[in-house]
Length: 300
Image (cartoon, rainbow, N blue to C red; front, side, top):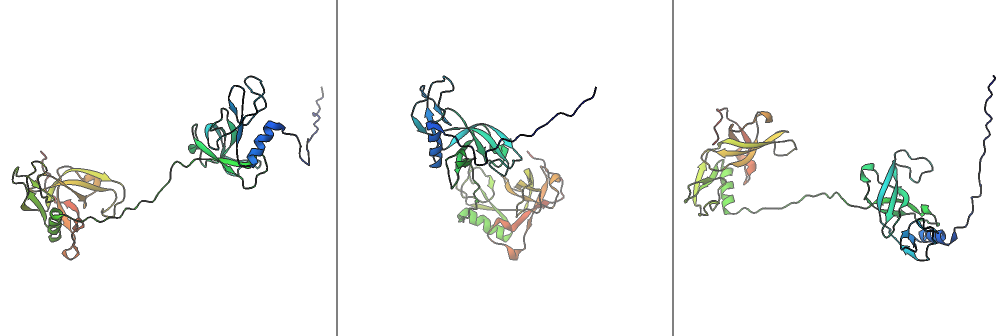
């Protein structure tokens, strides 16, 4: 039995001058309002607001009322489909989403394009607003697209402030400029606090006695940091609480001269000072603490 090729005829239905149709009063009102930069819906006999407006209530089949309600312009996305590769006839030439948008004041959703930039930025519940074309002619494309509302911004923050050292802190910093750590001994509980302070945080006694402490101590606890810091020797670097010999509370400082993964609790360290000619009233006089090579201390 012989087979034959199927007969195929190509037909094109085209209206070169465009297909002209009447809109009717309901759709005509909707398009006229779009041309004016407004979005309206129509109220049904049951009180629901249809957007886009229809001539009949899709739930009951009853004619709608002549009560037109301005809605939006903002709305909420109820569902969306992402278009990664737009086609020539699509409204946007970059990735976008087709979305169902329930405009504020409406009971039904409008289908339109949402220029979200990234599908992760668009999910049910996303708030959007219309982007109107500058030249409007009375069509749904008078709305170029919708875009998400602005909910987050990036603000460069660079606070700059000056701290005036009080008497106790100035006393401590003057000692650091000389290359020594000054603590204060409480006359009530006999604890030595460093940096030097004017009163005891435990018993409240006024501290007058200064104690010159050595620049050696023991690491009590530490943290490994992976974010750059201009004061640090390298990244990762270690910041640690160091209990100076003769003190009763630790002070925080950087640790250098040792790989971060080798730092440990109980490690004995010594301050590494900048040259005396470079010192100021600042803790920057101490670059960091480096291991002394002594045996680890036992922490109580």
